[in-house]
Image (cartoon, rainbow, N blue to C red):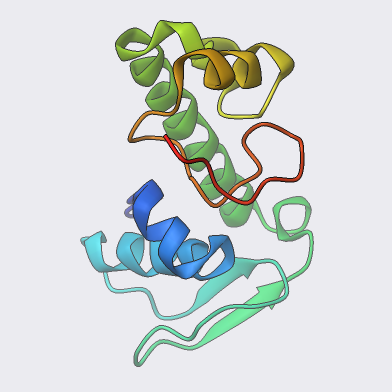
Length: 136
């Protein structure tokens, strides 16, 4: 890679703008941080909010078709895994080192018992029972 960057969107931002818009915002923030201006963006998926003055192509299942998209997917996944491990050190009861943010039974039980943290996305179905938000 000539350059790479990771874009971050906070849980509060995700709750405010929704997960799809947040993914676009994260991609834009990553492009903003690049040390080299890209000539064209390849986006894994079927939708994207255009980045100013940079053409793009969306590619469904792009990580299986382009090495650059596959590499970006690996970077994003390993960054997220490292982030979840750091959260686990701060809040071990939520088991983030094992579930990596997915709502396992153990994670949901911890939320029911201990409430949420600033890292939880409150508009998600945190308890798996159809609720839209928690009142903690």
